[in-house]
Image 1 (cartoon, rainbow over the protein chains, first blue to last red):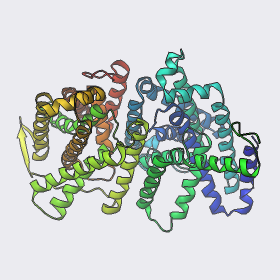
Image 2 (image 1 turned 180 degrees about the vertical axis):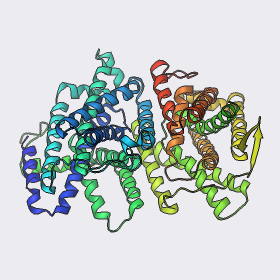
Image 3 (image 1 turned 120 degrees about the horizontal axis):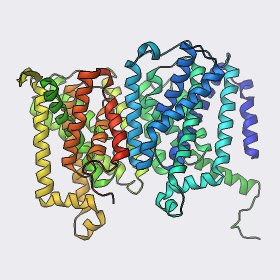
Image 4 (image 1 turned 90 degrees about the vertical axis):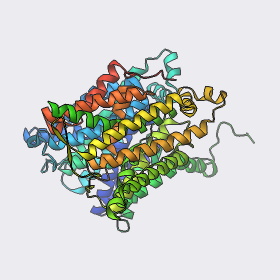
Amino acid sequence: MSWWLFFAVVMGLIPLVSSSHTLRIFIFANFLAIFAMSWDVLSGYTGYISFGHPFLIGIAGYTTAILTHHLAIPLYLSIPLAVLATMAAGTLFFFPALRIKGTYFALVTLAFMEVTYHLMQVVKPEITGGTRGITGLPLLATGTVLNYYFSLTAMFLIAIGLWWLTRSDVGLVLSAIRMDEGAVKSAGLNTSKFKLFAFTLSAFVAGIGGALYTHYLGSISPRGMFDINFLFTILVAALIGGEHTILGPILGAYFLTFLLEYLRPYVPGAWRFLFYGLIALFIYNYAPKGIYQIVQTVGNFIDRRILGKKRYGDQIT
Amino acid sequence: MGGIIVQGFLISGLYALVAVGFTMIFSVGRVLNLAYGVYIMIGGYVYYVLAQLLELPKIPSFFCAALAGVAFGLMTYLGLVRRLRDNPIAVEISTLILAVVMQAVVIIIFSPAPKAIWPMIPGVIRLFGVPVTWTIFLAMIISWVILGALLLFVQKTALGRAIRAVSMDTKGALVAGIDAERINLLTWGLSGALGAIAGVFFASYTQLDPTMWVFPLIIAVAVVIVGGIGSIIGSLIAAHIVGFLETITTTVIAPELRGVFTMLLIIVILVIMPKGLLGKEET
């Protein structure tokens, strides 16, 4: 628990030492962390790989965009509505797939994302803004620093909420489902109920992230939202960071975002994805727990050697 | 009306070709190869480079494209899938990452702009009074031929039976003395070839584009879900259902809605008939 506080304080102090430009990178990392966490809640924990998170995020974004832009609904209403819409759309479309098999689920979610991408561009362009999307949306807050704190708070709240959840019984069941759903079922638990819960939670977080992100950017377009590249970024962030953990996606998101910034002057557009992909493949195969594992190892090292904490199995000298 | 029927058959033929390579791996290996769409993309681009940029003769270029598919299929298997065999989740994710990486490679080499392929056979033929391009007619014919040959191969030859054995029960097949590893190599190579061949036609039908690997993947998915795993005939039927659904949608309702009803169909089938039309039992 103390670690959380430590990080909160450190992160809170960052604006004092960073330029506006760096802060913007942090903001993006925070949002990516939120998306990655939402993905991990579903896919990392239950093992049902979702390729459709951009779909959910996009629904959230578009809902709030349309509500605020065309109907002049204020933000504190449109955002919750967007989250509800996301959860509804997700349940409606994904749930049939969840009932069946993990493999099918991945395929179907991918299909959804792709089809929605095309749909959004052509259906009712006067509402959705067609290919170019909608711009000029009301912003959450003006000024980079405020936006930073906003995104940071959102990320922390979500992280803590999810962290607490995974330590609970529900989290245990979800992890068990991933390992062996059959076993969980034979223990008498209704896996569908749990899957639905994980799913709704994931949609909820994705919805919040999507709505907030849209109002941070002030615009939305099909390209940015329903994009394979976006999916890829979220996935890689969660995977590199370490799926099946909560901290992992956050680490992964930060790592990825800063790597991107670092590479930007040296490596043009498409090459970046090449790099991400290769790094992701490498890490995923050789260090499946990702950065989280590395951090954990370091953390353990510090605990034992430096702080002198003993572990249960140690010999008592 | 006649136009819809003719177009429907043509598209369905193409879709069947696209789907069959995917079905094979999915049936045999129970593995989701999301990089399958990449074989299609590679087939299209290799053919483009050979036949159009280098202006080599068409038939050899076509075969080279198929070979490229085989190579890539084998590489996918040997490089990724074989090591991660016990972990289907890892395979799904890794193949997706691979696909995105390949997309990046294609963008780097060819630029993100879509390109049009010159038709394999120029000109138009009238079928029952409906004008269609030679290329797509050829695609349909080749598709039927390949599917027919595949069906015969799988039903009648020893090797084909071996493939079916492995797809039904790997351990059982091993016990019966079948070299499952060889079968896997064969299947993946074949899948790559089929994908690449489908890719040449698919690219002719639409256009070359670094993101072109996604849509065929979805089609293949739809066909597998609707037709059921492990059934080539099921794939054929499903391909026609999907093909006609799309043709009717785009012609009668609205061209922009392409893919929507396919998606809905997937959902409906998953809810009502998760095994698909002719799907075999899940082991």
